[in-house]
Structure formats: C-alpha cells, structure tokens
Image (cartoon, rainbow, N blue to C red; front, side, top):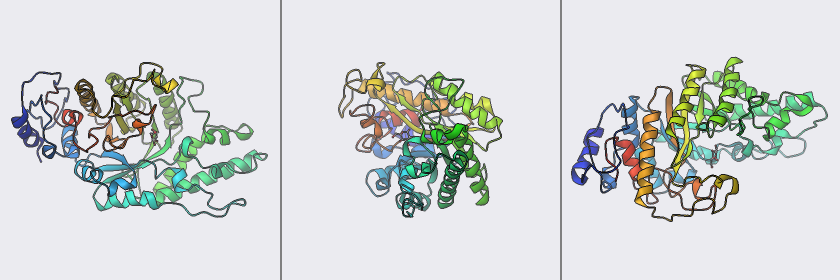
Length: 418
Ligand code: GLA
C-alpha cells in the first residue's frame, strides 16, 4: 500500500492540532506523506507495513527490515503476526550462536561425538524461507558463546595446538554456513574490539579465541582473519558471493568515538590485509538521549575505509532510560533510573519516537543495506533485564503488539508527535 494513502487516512481521522515536536527529519522519503496526527495514536489496524514504508523511504525494493527472534515467535501471537506484516528479515536471537548449535565436541578423545543442534535455528530459518523473509546470520564467533571444546588440547605444543583450534573453527564455520545457505549476511565475528580506546591493540583481550591463538607467543588476533578466510572459502564453495552472502564484523557502541576507533582500526587492518570482509554490523543498542550525529559518524567511518564496505544496523533498540553516568558500571537502581512500569509517561514515548525518526533519517544512505531490531515488541526484550531489571519499552511495538508513537514517527516522518 502506498504510504501516502495508508498514513493520511488515519491522519484525517485523528489529526488534532499540529502542536508538538514532530517536524520532518525524515529527509528523502520517496513518497512523502502529508499527515499531521498529533494527539491520539492512530488505530493499530491502520498501520501500514513497516517494511513497505521503509523500502519506499530508502528507495530499495525488499530492503531488509529485521527483527531478532526466538523460535517461539514463529508460532506465538501477536509476535508472529507482527513479524509477517511488518518485517522482511529475521535474525536468530540466540539459536545460531555456537553454544546452541554445537555445545559439545563433535568428537574428541575426551568427549563422545556430539551432533550439532540445528533444530532451534531451523525453526526460524524454515519459517523465514516459507514466508518470504530474509535471514541474517548471527553469529559464527562470539567470545560469550564459545564452547570450551574449541580450545581443548595440549598447549605444550603451541604450533599443533593452534593448528587444531584453527581447524575446529574452520570446520565449525563450514558446517554452519552450509546448513543455512540462504543467509544474506553473516556476522562472522561479534564484538572482537575492546571498549577502551587503544590504538596499540584495539582487540578484546579477554576472548577465549584471543587467548588460545596467543598460546606460545602466537599472534592472538589472527583468529579474526581465520574466521573471515574460512567463511569465504565455504561461501565460494557453495556458489555464493559478496553480492549474495555478506561477511561482516559486528560490534556495539560504534556510536561512541573511542570504541569506534578500535572497531575501525580492526576493519581497516582486515581490508589492508585483503581479508574478505564486506561490511560492518552496528548493533546500535541505544538510549533515549543517543547522539544521532555520532550514529551517522559511525556509518561514515565505515564508508571512509572503503567504498566496497556496507553498513548493517543489526540490533537496534532505544532504551527509554538514559544512563545518568554510572548505571552500566554499577548495575543497580540507583544510579540506574528507577522503573517506570508498564505505562511510561507520554513525554518519554514522544522523546523516543523523535529519536527513532531521527535515526531512520540517518540510516537513509546507500551504504546502509539492512536494519534489524533486537526484538519485535516490548513484551520480549533483553533490556527488561539489562543493565538492571526494570520495565523497558525499547521497540516500535508495545507489550500488546500495537504500534507505538515510535512506529508512527518512523513510518510517517511528517506526523506530529504529541
Ligand atoms: C549482544 C549480542 C546479541 C545479544 C545482545 C543482547 O549485542 O550480539 O547476540 O546477545 O548482546 O542480548
């Protein structure tokens, strides 16, 4: 449906005054709408499909608009209905991570051979393929989900040990990519950069991969190159290319200049070394007071390294709680802001809506080729438990699955928000 018709019909019914902080930051919407809205949320049934609106805004047919899901979302209302109406891509929230796919060794001297556990991710993958949704692959390597069997062995012989760990990594990557051949982009590595700016060593040093590769004085960072090299070998072997299956490095806080410098230093070195990296995934777990100019700077930083690199927004959510400073360090209330409960003040929802609108205006650039949220609706979000337990509302749909002001601010850049 054309967004002008979809959105202005609701606006005709619900337009009040043009007061409020709406304004148009939507920029280059290809089908600019003219609705005003303002006082009351339009009825849920009048919501146009998010994926259609964004594809029109960005001028890209089938632009992937994704949500991270667990298998249950494919069969549970209202999640499955929202997914089918509004999204064109899915990411497995947890089920494609190594500790789910292959928690136990696929055969070693100390453990019985264990088969991979593809079934949970298969549920998501098959649901997607059967319903014309694209699939983002997340993730082949992450320090938080690295089963210990990868690193078993005799470290007294570093050369052999390293070769063994490398072989396991490559075999694992090969098996997983082959199992999900229609994935359009893989987060080959997740969160390999360290948080504190460190030009001398931008890598996270507490990763078991970094530690294992460093045994006997080896280059601890080489696991990243191996992961990309192996992923590319399999991609080629199954007839896929950079155009059909992108190999990405994914990380958080690229909107913060210090962390961004580390991520970009790693990406630059991979490009310089001729590694088959096709782009950067920006998690963008943001807060309500996020600086959108810094989000743009993160996207531009990737563009500046090479015009062949793409940007994906991979884990978008906007917490309604700003961090007063020490929240993430202390993880208690206070200093984290107190729980606002299930019905946050309109000012917060409006502020969030305008932040989302500004973010999507920032995402409207050719290098951004996929935008995924970390969840479907506020009923299921990791932010209800992180950095503290409190009721969060970070997504475009509320706990009942109804579109929030944030939804309307994104799909109709001209609708005024109360
Ligand atoms: C990171 C990971 C995701 C997910 C989120 C929050 O961003 O990349 O897979 O685990 O944390 O849960």
